Length: 403
Image 1: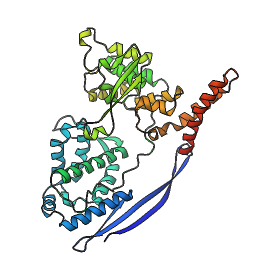
Image 2: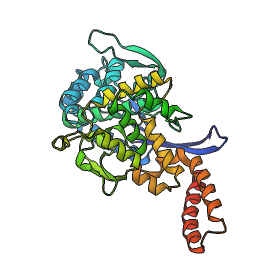
Image 3: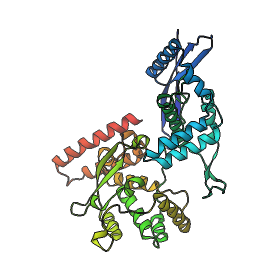
């Protein structure tokens, strides 16, 4: 028979601009008693997930918990499971490099532990340890040691690693015959909060300095311009082919990877992005001289190479704490500054939910104020005012719910 208890409490978050947010936290505690009298407790954020776990434990108890699969879990280490996943599963994914980035620290910290001995408590210890570590950069060869950097491991990185570990264990138990009577230990472990995300933008003359520093590398220079002008992700821009560019309608067709597609390597979405005159100029600057060469991908160098070149350009320009992905944030911010609303921006940037655009709330509020000032001008027609005020009211309603 299972024991159940619901716990709830409130936490108060204070933002830099003085705003506060009161959040309700809910946890569901479940406990089952194994045949030997051992009590096992698991905590879930979702009630249905807890009920499914209890049902699974009761089923395993009834079936004897598949003794052979449990025994196999005692004889294999977490490191061996990670290695097999990388050999048999990760090679077929679009995110092989990302998978390796998650597998390496997991193998380093948990690799020697038997799979059957991996508990939610041990996974929680891994989470806490990683959040106190600094980022590492490989030496480039097998013999070279990784070098610690000044930057700390970000919560978003640890969150991805825990999700990756959970997927690996799911594959091991569902496809490879390993059995864990207490279920997947990586599930139910609280993920670290990511906060409000990065808000780094180009300030002052940083853009002109950056482009000047990249002037000796036409690919890098035009990539910087396109990342800002299209607000695309690096992977999306690197997947662009010459046939995706329509100069006549000034649009770009992106074969955009859904963030969830990186887990399976399958699902893809498409969206059309408007091209500014500056973006058109950048694409034309990258065109091969011979028309016969204008086939396949626009960018034919490794994405990692341009990221490294970007870092060197920032160093030459004297710009600190700027990443290639920050250019997407810059481009998205400029779309709001043009007066576009949430739905219009998300259609261009490919953000899956409006919640992902919350960091731009203050920027939107400022733009709404400017738009209202324009609408109230004497020369504005009644019809135009009525239509645009309706759109503004929708924006304000969204803002009100975010407070």
